[in-house]
Each structure stands twice: as C-alpha cells, then as structure tokens.
Image 1 (cartoon, one colour):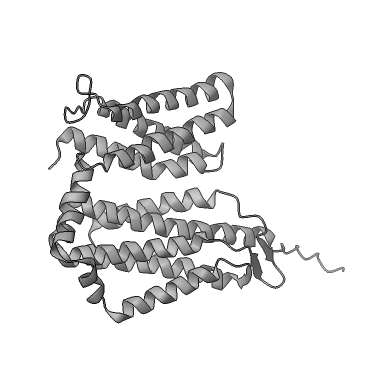
Image 2 (cartoon, rainbow, N blue to C red):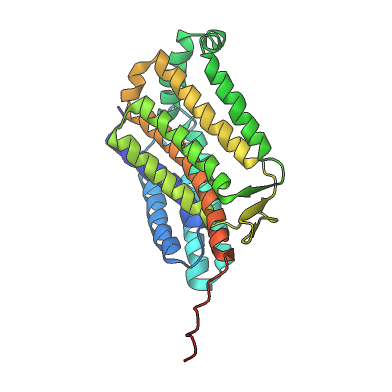
Length: 312
C-alpha cells in the first residue's frame, strides 16, 4: 500500500487530470468555467506542493529531488503565469495558453512519468497488473480462447466506426444511437468487472460528466448543419468516432482478459479506479459529442409564433 502522502498526491493529481478538460475548454467566462477553474488550480497546486515532500534516491537526484520534479516547477510557473496574465494584464488568450500548457505538462506528461517502472503507479501497472497477467498466458493462447462472438462484435463496431469517417446525413434518433450504445457497452463492462460498487460507479459518473461537459462546450466541426424541416443532420466525416469505439472495445477486452487471469485485481482500489475513470472518459466523450448536435437542433428548430386573438 502507498504511504498517506503518496495517496494524497495521487488523489490531487487524478482529480486535476479529470477536471482539467472541463475547466480549461469550457465556455469562457461562464460560472461553470470559473468554478471549475478555481477547483482545478487548487488541485494542481495541491499536487505540486505534495510532490515536494516525495523524494527518491533511486534516480539521479539532488537531495532526493529527481528530474521528474521539474514538472513541479512547470506547474508552479504555469499556474502563476496564467493567473498573472488574467488578473494583472487581463489577457485571456495568454491566460488560456498558460493554463492549457500547464495541464499538458503537469497532468499528461507527469502522468506518463508516473508510469515509469520504478514509480509506484508504474510498478503497479507493469509488474503487478500486466506483468502478472502476461506470465499466466501467452497472447496466442488468449486469442485462441476468445469466444467467436467477441470477434463478431469487434467487426461490427469497426464497420460502424468506419462509416463515421465519411460525410453523411442522419436523423436525430440515429445520431443518438451511437453514444447510447457505446455508453451501455461501457457500463456493462464496468458492472461485469466490479459489480455495482458505489465507488466505481461514482468515479465513472464523475469522469463522464466532466468529459461530456468539456466536449459539449467546444464548437462543432466545420460543415455540420441541421435541416429543421427535414429533421436531419449533415455531418462531415471524422476519424474520432472510430478511435473512440476502438478505445471502448480495447478497454473492455483488456479488462476482461486481465480479470480472467487475475480475478483478485477486481478488489484492488487502484485498478478499479483506473478502469472506472477510463470507461467514464469514453462515455463522456460520446455523450458530449451528441449533446453538441442536440443543442444545434434546438437552436435551429423554428420557434412557434404566438397566435393573435381572433377579431371580434
């Protein structure tokens, strides 16, 4: 088990990673943007301050501070610079660049560093989760024991994803079918892996809401239109749905194989949290993309004019 300080640091970092897209890419100036922004800055500073007390002598270091601690300096500099530009200069563009750069460097890049084999998360992933599973069965054996219907499902999902790569027209009902179906697939994977555990479901909901909020606040791709008379969308082709579909299937398959080889992982909080957050992230991305189209349909729909009173 990690020390309390490591747990505190990981909690700050994971929450900042999940909240970041909503805080940084939401509609600027809205109450949601400001509230999420304050919370995200607090989480980032909490992660940076707690990292100062985490030292390691297993890598090149100065008094226990390793090259990974450069991310801590980037976080302090990025958050400080972003706040200075918006408060002292009123420069929203530079404020946005600093904060988004801090998210990429302080969350994503730092997260990749955290997966190094000698780090706590890296050791958990490569040695305990994947390492143990890899030692129990070869890839050929895993593929050979995969039921045939799984390959059929994969082929159908890939065909659906490829169809999204081309410009097309679709009704509102058809547009909503994909996110609803993929969300159902993610939830079924979550429940089959961890049952109805409140912690897993809560983390899934939180990740889904944050991701959906971030995506729904972004503009639609150029060429997206809605014909209110025909009630149909004109949609440009996109590779994104195919990648998201492949991502959901890959997570579900990998989790199923891993738990079949090491059932005890289902009871490890770290494994359950990572899988729940991934499922929630993918679900939120699908829901957010559908929400943008729903808002376009509502904004384009003709408004009914009030009927004038009949003459006496």
